[in-house]
Image (cartoon, rainbow, N blue to C red; front, side):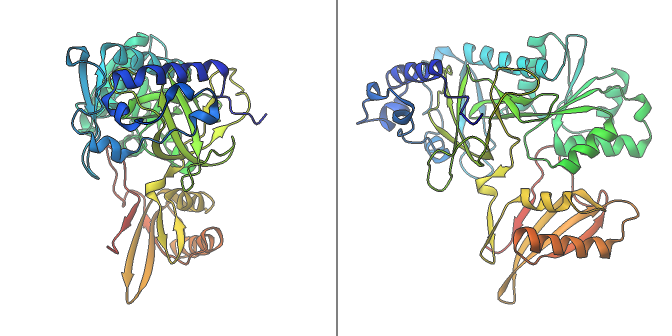
Length: 414
């Protein structure tokens, strides 16, 4: 089965309805689609000829150029961090907030979370969408929320023990930090976690196994981004065969990020999302820069919702070294196949004595022969990536941990 499960007739009608509304309600899209007769969009091919919406478009609209309803209909503002440029401001209507919490509640239900669970929320609150999204979805489901937010690991662990938290919501980096602290302090027997809902960054199989084993939980990938509600627009199920997406709220495409052309299901490309119901700041064909693929076929869990694969990285994570394009996911794949190498790594790229030098720092398991592991990592990088690297093995815990996303590649050449 290879067809695109997002391309159902009723979804095309939803898209046509969105286009019929959007230019009357959104000054942003009235300008962007000037000269285009949206009534002529009748087929998937017609829709796929519409221009993409880019992150730069959203930054140029700062602060509230994306707003598509009157001020009195806006009940909340969220924002991207703005660490790589002007932040993106996203306004939400009451219905947007309701829709988001409904999608998030579906995520919890997909992960087997119930009203009897105690949901321990560690992501940040405020303008960032994560903390409040995890909280609202759990409340919508009817579970108990423990809204700790980020930081203060001593307090996190104390509350986790005292309140008998059963579900951990965190970034993979912070989940790993908590898992390592639980192991170091010898308090595993006092922890009652059974599920981990993990989001915000790519994480590899070794990291997943470490977190799952050390916390004693089943892990679920959750997906989202500030521009499209926030986390909660897709989640993996118990079969770990991709993330189910709520296609009654959103339309997904995967494109070749160089050409902009559609790629078939099963092929890796850049994810593009269109919001079908969003009122405050609807988006048409928004390029996420996230790399994934549409997963063909039906899931063993029986869910009717289509799937995308686990996010493999971002197009803007890409760097070129000695003419070779490198993604963090490639390094992760190399380490996954090397015995003695652990999950955490950092890549440093420098220009020394007239040439590029790529150094890979990676943690090794206790008792590993570091020189031997370094030699194997060097060999595998050459075989798999076509580049000679400088491997540097370090001990567990020597590379930094983060409450948010952990940077993997540092390009010091510019």
